[in-house]
Length: 74
Image (cartoon, rainbow, N blue to C red; front, side, top):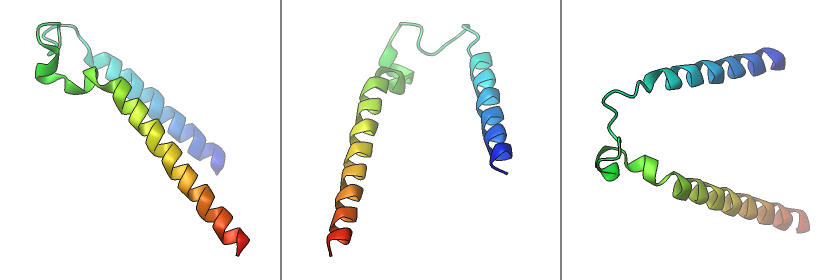
């Protein structure tokens, strides 16, 4: 059962990647260097988004670990 779930998820990721690469035709792209903030705000902030995600995950795991330690010490 786990193998089927793994293969299904892998297939989903591979198909999504193929579809995403197929969309970039290069003709009429909204961010051709004219004004990068006009229609593509996420492209400019991907690094900050990744850093925020890592900080949030670290904070969440830290709180979870402390709650577990507190529960074990009782």
